[in-house]
Image 1: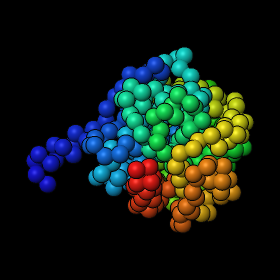
Image 2: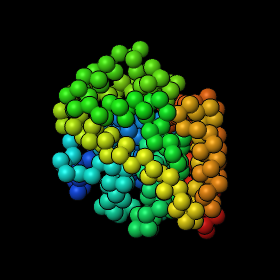
Image 3: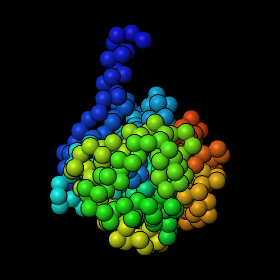
Length: 300
């Protein structure tokens, strides 16, 4: 690669910051004038969840990856920030507004998919969304999701200091791979999970945010049941990508989501757990690319 090419690569990969109403968030922007894709991660994760698919998609798409205040973020948010799921969904809408993003393909995995569902049902945010992708995510009554989610919910009851001690245990790979931690979420992504737990270990402000977020999210466990009632109103193309043998997000939920959405389509992916972006990044990138190309061609 030439020197100029290396400089452009560094420019595309660098982490940017944006001041929003809740505080400063970090994000990555691949740049370019291709179709715009915004990719959302889940709890105790950051934007690096999407590194694999974006390495492929960024060749001909503009990919934006915000790191949301889900407990692995860079900067503590304001003490009065709304860290419920609707509050964080509103933050994503604000992010799209501030960057004036249009005809967005909104993609969410894990709790990021719950955010996408909320935005699909938000009339004002929906004006910027051209299509949506839901990848093995919380839906209906699956909140908290599985054994991993129930463990997180319990840890959120701890004071921030004790939550930090709980997170310190995640330094050990053997503990990260347990079913109560990340073991049921990914087959191949342990290096990513090791990164995700560090902010809560090292920064008191992030521990405070993580505890507030977990308490706010778990306070309304019927939120996604109510949200599902409005999903038939999303009359734009939608792709549901589900891990065929997901142990955390029931396969039946993927089918139900696709059936509820007027233009919904379900694709099941083999040899992956919940976090398809980690376990099958090339497959997911191909599915997203084909979906965007097909829906844009259909619109024309």
